[in-house]
View 1 (tube, rainbow, N blue to C red):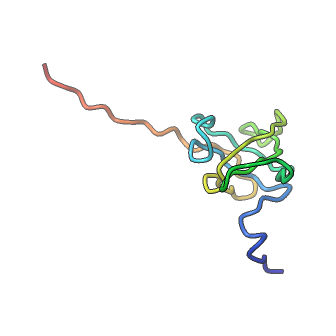
View 2: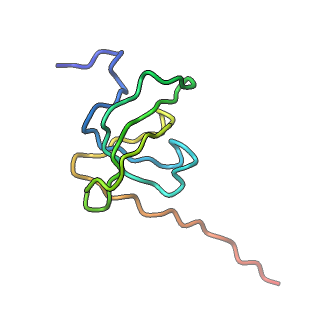
Amino acid sequence: MPENNEDAGRFRAGDVVLLTDAASVQFRKPIVVRVIREIHDRYTYDGWLWLDAYQLNAKGEAVARRELFVMRAGVRRQAPGNTRRPAPVRRRTSARAV
């Protein structure tokens, strides 16, 4: 059954998503969560949402229940079974000769 435009971009129970600093500055160290539900009865800014979710460890096990305020555009859906965090980005620094 195709999604209608109203449902496009909504997160449903069971969705596994990656949260990085693109979703909120609090996720400078990325985390993976399994969505319980979107919380619709709280005030948010345009483009932001509240998620009720379980934070997952590297094995895909729930380790904490969290309510998270995130930017919708920064939340990345993961393939089913993929709970691995991306490798950290190493920034190169230029060495200066003295």
